[in-house]
Image 1 (tube, rainbow, N blue to C red):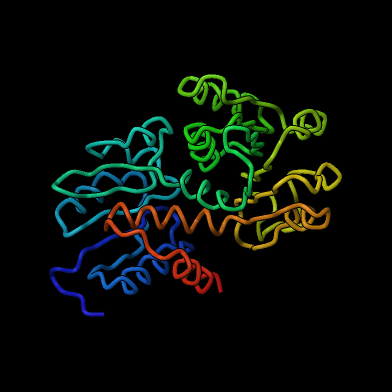
Image 2: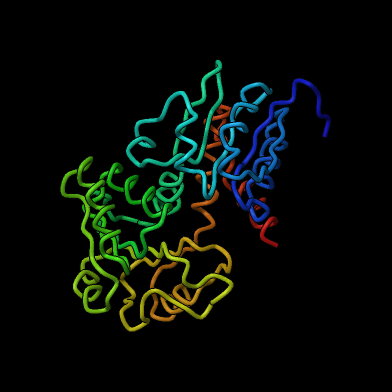
Amino acid sequence: MNITVNTKMYAVIGDPIAQSLSPKLHNGLFEANGIDAIYFPVEVKSENLEKLVQGFRLMNFGGFNITKPHKLDIMKYLDELDPLAQKIGAVNTVVYRDKKMIGYNTDGFGFIKSIEKKLGKKVKEELTILILGCGGAVKSVAMALADWGIKKVIIANRTLSKADELIEQINENWPGKAQAISMEESELKKVLPNADLIVNGTSLGMNDAPERTPIAKELLKKDVFVYDMIYSPPMTQLLKDAKAVGAQTENGLEMLLYQGLLAFELWTGIFPDPEIGKKLLEEGLK
């Protein structure tokens, strides 16, 4: 790689950041598209975030991605926010152009793109989507779904007050689109018959506890699409159970892929080949 003074710089910032697959994805995409750019991970503590952003302004930066725990705090140091990012209240992508830093949130787009083709003949305006959990990614996805125009998004969470808080924010911007329930089995049973898609937005099923699942196997039916935002392991217990009852399944790798592809497009004006991107991520996981 020939790095010169003209090489455009990009980064992903977070704490910790060593696990990020973004450098593998974006450096591969820059190379595949013949773009003179480099992308690298930067670990930064919250107290140094402002200094880092000021430093980026002095360098040949085109933009950067943001991951935990900085998606909210970063907004204080930007010049503008995309309207959807403002409603979500979190930013995962920044474009630096003409001395202006503009914040976007591509997480929800990543999720929507990963399910769009798999919905078949289902019309988005008739979709009811049940999301388990209430973390940062869930917030972005739920708001993007409401903005996209689905019929209803139901947020199920162990702490009901957190789910209530989120649906209040959603309904403020998209009236009547959201409903909150607790994650009790009795509550899930009431909404599951109307759910077209079940999404796991909790950490249950990750590598540290692969046998755990947010929803009992007996509650799953073959006519529902089951989606897990987790991509490592690629087949969680939830997805194994869903497959066993004949349901359509998907893990979170394509959500990761498409949120990255949109960030790449925002920076370069090029929407890259998803097949190349997916291959790069799969190599990174190995």
